[in-house]
Image 1 (cartoon, rainbow, N blue to C red):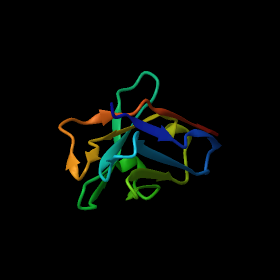
Image 2 (cartoon, helix red, strand yellow):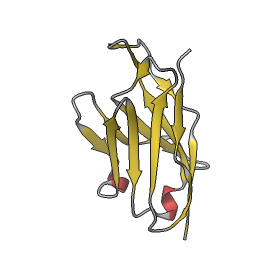
Image 3 (cartoon, helix red, strand yellow):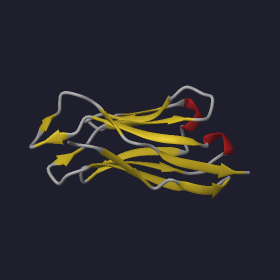
Image 4 (cartoon, one colour):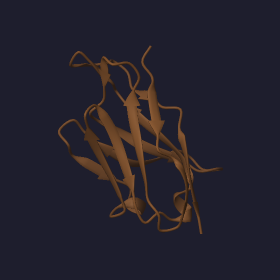
Length: 119
């Protein structure tokens, strides 16, 4: 069964940077589009950034100019710069993996990775 696996979370000071990666488990699965979401304690999950298969991107206003979503070699990345304490949250990847060139019928969620930004 395919799973999405996030990596790259951690703790940084304000102004620092992190790069999150999302990959589909198993060598036959790839992702070339999807979104990053985040959920802070007591808040609803929100879209942070998304990238489509044609490469177009969309960002939440709160991260524009600081975060960059990209796709490379079957993985989706989120580069986060100039991090702020309010970026602290669990970050989730959402994507529809491709197997042998064909998108799967459903979207999948990763297990989440914690990002903590201290002031």
